[in-house]
Amino acid sequence: MNHFYERNSYLLNHEVNRTFEELLWMSQDDFRTWVREMRQVVIHAWDNLGLPPRVGYDEQDIIDQFDKMMGFPVHKFLVKDELTGEHNLIRNTSVIGNAANQWFPTMMSTRINYTANDDGYSIHDWFEKEDLYERFVKYAHRHFKRDGFYHYSLPVRAADAENFLFHSRSGQDWIEQFEAKERQYARSDYWIAPKQPDTGYTGYNEELKNQVWLTLTRAEVDSLNIPDKCKSNIDAIGETDTYQIRYYEYGHKVFPVGLKAFRVSFCQYAVNFPPLTAKYLYEKYTEHIPRDQEQVVVYDPSAGWGGRILGAMSVRDDRSIHYVGTDPNTDHIIDEGQRTKYEDLAEFYNTRTTRGRSLFPHTNTYEIYRLGSECIGSDPEFQRHRGKVDVCFTSPPYWAKEAYSDDPTQSYKKFTVYRDWVEGFLRPTLETAVEWLNHDRYLLWNIADAKFGKDMLPLEQDSQDILESLGMEYVETMKMTLAQMPGGNRIDTETGLPRAKNFCKISNKAGKDIFLKYEPISVWIKR
Image 1 (cartoon, rainbow, N blue to C red):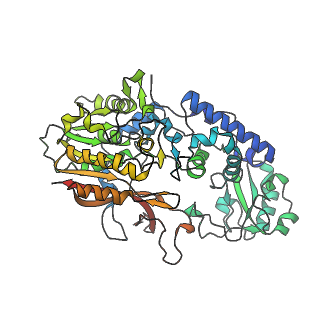
Image 2: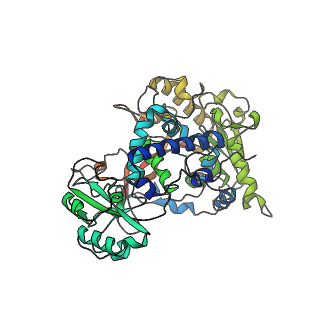
Image 3: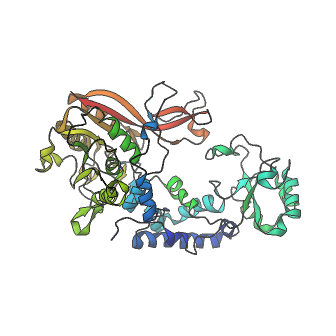
């Protein structure tokens, strides 16, 4: 029995996966009915078939992807921060290794809290809870019926016959040419998109910025011979006198590309630590260890969603890694309590890729505990690693920001007040990590301040204070870049800089400087 899900063919092939034009032409009542049916199909696939609303890879695709990990040139991830001149940015844009997510379908069931009241929602909640239906319809209307992410249709650009059929310099001329020359072929169409005067560029698609789009006034819309089906969204945003022409080709199903909407817009969701980034960090901070050392022990206090154990298994074969991980999440227990998904994932990598099937196999090893990192130090088996850990590397819980499960062993359940959590979870976790670390070995701590309501919890500073009190020596901060920050509303108009606390600047392949958010990974050494 496989303990991972594969490609979500159930949803992709289901009749609820309609084409964009079918949704575009629906009445509001019909669209609401489609939304309800679509939610039911997604929940059925998720709860009964183990298929969350993601595309997923088939088993052979997972093997092929994992095969690429050991030899992947992760050293190329290191780039310069143009703001500081330091080469301390980790820029990993590869999806290789992300199939690890398929062992953990509950990732998208993780509730994201915005206050200390523990009342946040998960993506699963958005599909399941009836009291979220009306808001779901509103968001779905924006993303699917009005194509808010520009997935299926693009605004017609002036004088662009190559992409939009006709070399037109006015919206009226383009409409007239389409109806006279293209309508008869029934292969493509357009719809009239109401726009506020200052929202020609939403900030989401960079390629839409600084373009000249063909527009229409309301009088032109009313006077032109535009079919009613092309005006189904004409009053979607209320009164306006600016309309764009959105062109599309027939036949594009809303899924799989539309699945992005649930992760990007409906609510935040838990993400995995990128396995290749973990591989890079393991290799970088064990490089100084003598090659004749029999085993390099890496300890992960919060095993999370398996990204770090997969990264550890893929470390190049000039050293032998032994991964020691711990996590109390009971959702990850399989085989009637005999194993966890971490072990299943690592075993899959070790036995199904060429790493384990070659003539001279070299596989890394692993060891999993089902305890919280705040109490693991009392485990007799774990105690044999005291003073022998070569790298401690994790991304711990951000207190109650992500409610991974409702298990009473979860740290946010055990310590419902932040300061109690700092003393009851964060401090003992770091104390154990430092005590178990060998001398001249590194601790890597991936944590960032988290906002709860109006308060910003000082997770970075609290971690630093504890580590300094334990005698650890600060080395550097590596910056793990996240996705590009969209939208002018995230840039301070006075300073020209992002409003985010942690941001950097890189030069992309085209030589253009762009701002990125990053998560800090503070690096410490035990002398």
